[in-house]
Length: 190
Image 1 (cartoon, rainbow, N blue to C red):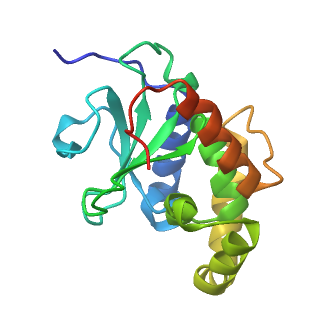
Image 2 (cartoon, helix red, strand yellow):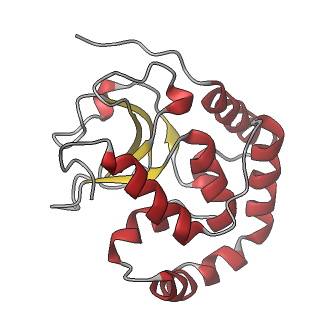
Image 3 (cartoon, one colour):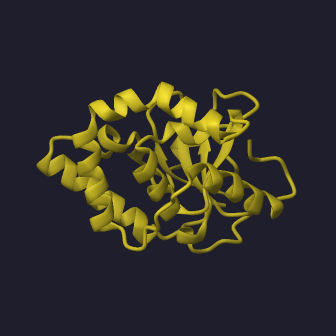
C-alpha cells in the first residue's frame, strides 16, 4: 500500500529554486547541486530502496537516488526524517545515511559543495582521510565552479529557513550515524 506524504517545506523551497534556475539561469538544480527532484516517485525505486523510504531526488547516474528514511513509517513529518543515499551499483553498500534531516543535507551541501562526497564516509578511518580525499578529488572542480556554487548557496539560504551551520562535517557524519543507527535493529545502512 502506497503511503502519501506531504512534501516538506524545505523540499518545496528546493523546488522553487529549481524553477528559478530554469527561468532565470537556463539551468536546473541538477546543474548546480547534482540531483533532480523526484518526490515520492515509485518509478525511481530499485531492489535496494528500503520499503519505508520516500524518494525525493535522483542524480541521473546509475540509479543513484536520495530518500527520506521513515523508520517503518513511524516518522510522519518528512522534515524530521533522516536522508539516505541509495546507490544500486554499490554492491554491499547500497544504502548510506547522509544527514539527520533535509535541512542538514542542505547545510552539508553548502559546506561541501558536492553531494557524492557524502557516500564516501565509510572509506575514511579518520578526519585526515576525509580532508585528503576531499582535497584530492573534489576541490579543484569546486574552485572552477565557484560562481555557480555561490549562486546556489545564496538561493538555498534565501528559500529554506532554519539551515544550521555545520562547522565540522566529519564529526557531524560520525555522530549522526552513531545516533541514528542506535535506533535501528538491522543493517540497512553502510
